Image (cartoon, rainbow, N blue to C red; front, side, top):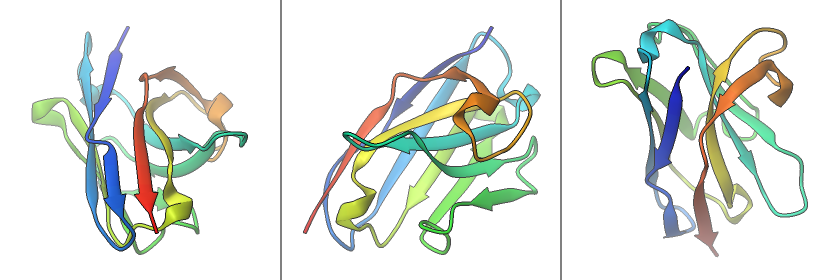
Length: 123
């Protein structure tokens, strides 16, 4: 079983950048397809990005495409989310998760989750 711990969240002004990290332990990150989701207060958990085992294939939600970049360093057992040109509507708790199958865009398709890291973007 893999354990995931996110970090790197914080408060940033609109237009700024943050890089989130997701450190895996218990099993090698290279064994998994991975994703990032986010959840704002009162809203459902929302797909952000997905990455293949070696990082050669990535998928993004339309709301973050062109601004966010998902990447991974399997040697460091770490997943990343580089977030640029941040907007107030990007404010949410961000979660990394292990993909188990099914639609990339549904949270039910992921079975191991981190505890989340808060991102707040001020206007």
